[in-house]
Image (cartoon, rainbow, N blue to C red; front, side):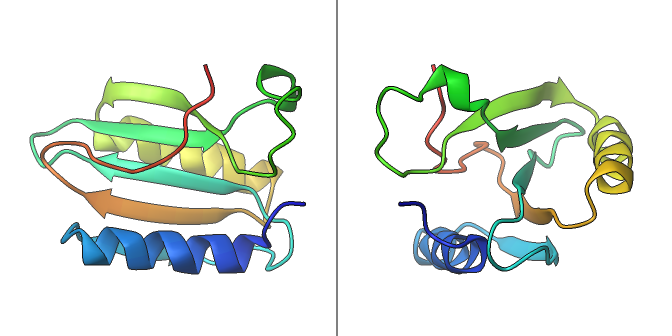
Length: 112
């Protein structure tokens, strides 16, 4: 069973804070099941965007953990913002976390 989106986001923001990584909740989505997207601004003019991984990539594990996939790597912050704007038009219930970290740390479980 998967955690509600609001609990997962709260826990992830807390973990980032404990690690000393600045992060903010930019957009609040559906508390129960809103998709979660994470923007990582590397503070050097580049940014990454992570979003929910397709279930087919990790369905067999059935651990209930949220898995993510890289949607944009090494793009500009404007590239990421344009992508998010389009996604929000499609899905108004999504969440957006923004992290500022030169080392691009995000602590997300990535699907392989």
